[in-house]
Structures are given as structure tokens and as C-alpha cells.
Length: 549
Image (cartoon, rainbow, N blue to C red; front, side, top):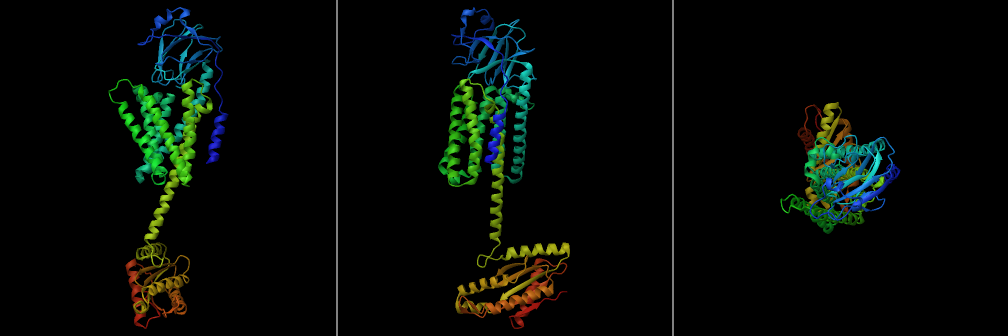
């Protein structure tokens, strides 16, 4: 798994960087905006050059404390046939551009349905039909926006790579989530539903943050919720991931305190935040990004602490979950920091997050598979122990009758031979009365040890109750079964004269019956039982066979 992570990191480093942008000769900011509103576009056009302050050759729009601002940008000479102004990762911002020759204001946001379908939505695209200064107005920005002037062909070529990578991640997450959701429908195990919910919410947040959700049929409806919709999806993803990691790695059992904190902070607190967000009051929702980001950071820290503590205690599933979660948290944090300071996103950060999300989904589903196998082994072990006799270690009555039933089905379908041997200790009550039940128990264990040594591969032995035992011999006819019974009788007579140093002169009476068409478990056991009683009546310490027909 570590090798897979290294391979993904190498792929990220190999991704091509963004193509070079056209030179921006001058970027000027209009300071001292009114507190209540933005200047109207017509008013901005009427302002003299002296109203704009030079801010240097910096390709970003910072805005004031309220995320608002006007800039005047002077592009360099156009290098292509169709120059474009690009505003990257606009998120919640509404951007208005007035470009020559007519300087008609064009306002766009990530949530608009009418954006140019030729381009992806990681950038708002504004054509620049003619040379001259461009005015850019920003409202609702929560971090500095990256701007660039590029040729349309270069942008289209870069968008092809972008769309292919995002489509790859979508395919992986949707495919795995649907399979796991089917597991939940069949098994009704909550961890599978939590996995599907976590991956679906992570994918929806990714698509909304990149803007691609608002161009997809079925998801376009999310645009009407605006940035509050993105906040809701991100916070619900935090809650689902917290509950999922707790259940996946059994954190409640291994690290109760960090698990409890993660459940309350990452899970319940996130759900409360979402509920408060959609209340009609307060109408100003600017408090939510701070509260949501704080909850997300606290949840991530608690998840890493809990998984790390469980890994330290050698819980393998927690260790693998930690391996998957650390790079995802690191990349998402790095992306948030770079956006908040207005630094350009490198390809490793921009595409590392979706690719690492796909890697995380694969690792987590492998952990789910391991969890399923572990539960299956535990179930099989529990069933096996439920069919074992606690005293002798062989099958109990239910277990040996089940093996006999399977053998009858195979004999009926394939026509093979099958025999049953009914074995009963002679004078067992006298042994218990004379030497105590501890010696009697030792006699039964010794009988199992000696008789088991005479059985062939595929034969079974079980205790029906008391001192009665049943042997199932698939593939043995009456002659072979009788010979096996005789070997067992002689071995017990010879090797069990003393048990635990006490002379008990242990012998057995054995009845043999072979399967005949129409036999059931009950009828075959009954016939071998009758043969055993015939051996008892004939003097004990002998083998008798039931009639074959």
C-alpha cells in the first residue's frame, strides 16, 4: 500500500504545470469602497486614472475586508487569436468584467448555468475582443482570486487534461460507492452505508468546489443553493467521515476517549452547524466559514490522533486507515492555505486532492474487505465452536448430524458408498461410580484419541451425548466400515486398559450401518444404533452390522 501511495505522488509530480500566461503590464486597485455597496459599472468607467492605485505586476485580486473590489488590468500584447481573461477558483465570488471595445458589464459566478460549455469551470472565462484596459469587479470573495490572460487554444488543451483527471476520479468513486452500497443493501451493515455516504459527499464537494457539478445534469439543482450548498456538503462530509472512521477501525473499542471526542466534534457538532446554517435567522451567514473550518480542522486532528493511537496499539485496520487519511488531510489543508493567501495552485495540489481522494477510497474499501473477511472468519469460528463438544473436542450432536446429512446428499447425488458407526463405551456407569466422573471424562477423551487415529481422511467423529459416539465414513461400504470398527475396537481394548494410570479395562460396543437409498440422518443413525445394541446383547466388546437391505 505504501508503494501505491508513492506511485501516486510520483504521478502528481509528473503532471504538467499551467501554460504560461500573457504578460499583465499593470494591475491597479480602486481603494476606499463605500461600506454599503459596490460602485456601479458606469461609475467605475467614469473614474479618472488617478482613482486607481498601482499594486504592481501581481496576478491576483485581493478585495477588501468584505471580499469586494474593483481593479483595472492592462493586458500585454495578445499572443493568440482569441485572448481570454481567466479568474481561477472563484468559489463564492461574483465577478463583473468590462472589456473593450464597448465595456459592457458581464457578470458571472461559479453557479451560473450559462457559462461557456467549451471550458471547464475551474476558471471563469471572459473573452477579450479588443486591446485596452479591462475593469474587473469582485463581490463575495473569501480569498484572493488568481487572474490570467491566456489564449483560448492553450486553455482548451489544459482543460482536456483537467476534465480527464476529474472524470477518472468520478468513475472510481462512483463505481466503488455503488458496489459498497449494494453490500449494505444485502448485509445491512452500517459501516458500508457510512462509506458510501462519505465518498458520495466527498465527491459532491469536490465537484462543487471545482464547479463541475453545476454543469452536470441532475446536479445543476445545487446551483440554486449557492455557496451555502457547498458549505453544507463539506460539513456533512466531515460528519459522515467521522462516524465512518470510528466504525471502520473500531475506535470505540481501542481508543474510547479520542473516539468519543471525534464522534461529538466531527459528527454531532457538524450536524448541528448544518442545522443552524439553514435556520432563517440570523440572515448573515458570514460566521459559518470560520465555524465550519474550525470544526473540520478539529475533526481531522482528532481522527488522526485516534487512528494513530489505535495503530500504536497494533490495530491493523486503523494503521491502514491512517495511511489513507494523512495524505488526504495534508493535500486538502495545503490547497486551502494556498487559496487563502492567493498563491497559484501547483498541479500537485490542484489535482493531488482528487487523485488522493480516489486513492483513499480504494484503500478504505480494501480495509472494508479485510473487515468483512475478519468477521466471516470470526463467524465461521463461532459456528465451528458451537458444533464442537467442549469435553472431547470432537463434533457435538448437531455438528456430526450435519456432516452426516452432507454425506447423505453427496451419496444420493453421486451414488457413492457411505457408512455410519455407532460406538458406546461398555460399563461406563460402573467406571464413573468406581473412579469418579473425572476418570470417566478421561476415558472418553482417550477413546476419541485412539479412535481418531484409525479414521481415514474425510471421516468424521462426533459425540451424540453421554458415552455415545457416531462416526461418519464417506466412501466406505459395509465391509470397509466393519473393518474400521474392528480396528477401533481392538485398539481401544489394547491401549485403554489403563487411563491416567487407573485400571479401567475400557472396551466398546460398535454398530455399523451402510447407507441405502431413501435413508435420512435419523434412519441411518437408528439402524447403526440398533446394530450397537445387538453388540451389547451379544456380550459387548464386539462389532455388529445392520443388514444392508
